[in-house]
Image (cartoon, rainbow, N blue to C red):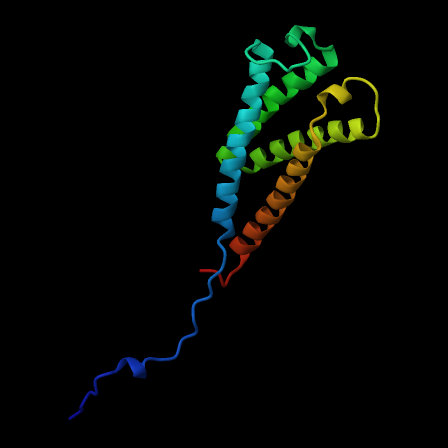
Length: 157
């Protein structure tokens, strides 16, 4: 006859505390959606400039701008909206299109800083916007890399 002893909670096997890790996939998704909203707002503000709903203080309208500056506004009006949609969908191409737009912005800003004459001085953004784009790009690259490593980790369940 076997007598079964009731197990007490103190008899339970010792287990390590579960490791609390950041879920980089969720962090990246929230970041991409936030960045998508920012990109869509930037794109719509460029379209507002094109349509004459909103113009900068230095000109009376889109038609009065230099052709190169007009091309820049049209470029960003299109690419920011495309990037915003791709970022909202959290697709890889959305991040690539956004990085392309940010790199073009940074190139324009750097050209103005280094004294390139012409329309780049008008199209350049404030230093704070440039620094914000650099910080966003750095965080995007870190978060995307961490999310990729975390999803490839076989011990992560």
